[in-house]
Length: 84
Image 1 (cartoon, one colour):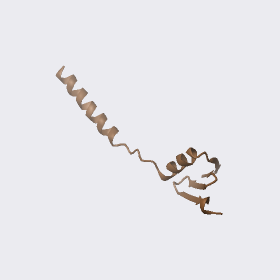
Image 2 (cartoon, one colour):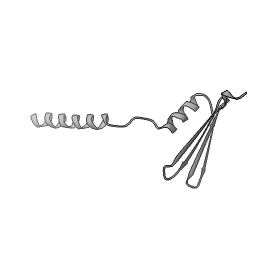
Image 3 (tube, rainbow, N blue to C red):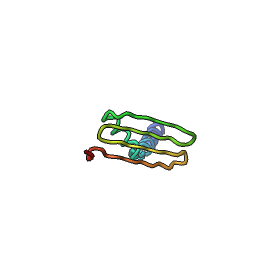
Image 4 (cartoon, helix red, strand yellow):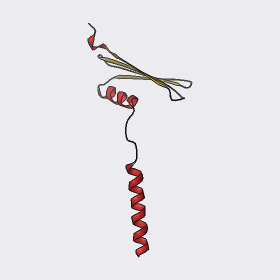
């Protein structure tokens, strides 16, 4: 019985240690996508070979994300609210 309690305690400690060390931070790309979806943006996704292009557009803002398979990501944000 004592051995069973010891095993359960070790298992619980290891489980808590690994789950508390996870990285829950979102990337800039993920934050922009969520923000634009909340604003009701038109989202267009194009995949060509190893490149992915995401274009999101509202009346006030336009975001373009270009991502290659090697992990290289370029983000361009145009704020149209200052234009007249």
